[in-house]
Length: 248
Image (tube, rainbow, N blue to C red):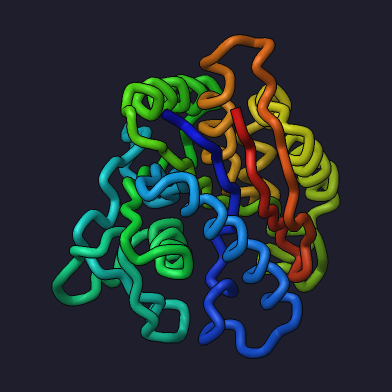
């Protein structure tokens, strides 16, 4: 049964070895760590959802990402190792998706015994495809008698300032405002209304993962509006980051 969904950024800066002593990074990290620790008190089995920008055409999502494998942030500047389950072994897989690396790193901050069943959704998936996948996940979560946690790993627009990774795009502020409003108020329909092409243009790579989240919370009665709490919502490096929780 789904207990709650925790929303965190898909950001390497969460890892201290990659972000140094940046006060901005520390604030995001503290919020994300506190959120997953709360989730660990409710469920030791998590389903994770992130975005896979490199998947083959026609493949809408990939399940079991990183299962039994060791990941590393070496490609981002430091050989910090992560895993999605306690039994992972072998040499680090250099190509493991960023969302899986982040989920694994946060898992270890919460409880080493937690297992994360990670899904990577195509950045090309339509809003309707994401919603349908979310509905499937909700059925899966609610069919299990064990308490189930959902971990959404996603970033907002990356073009909010001139120094942002994607430089500046004047459309980004409007897109990020719509994202922030929907995540803050627990509005699945607001997330489903996000335009995939526009989100892609302003670097809002988390769009697909958030629309899966919307599908998870539109599969039940329309009157069951999710209860949302916000721990962090800002764009310190020109990228929209959100940490919060949605509850059924």
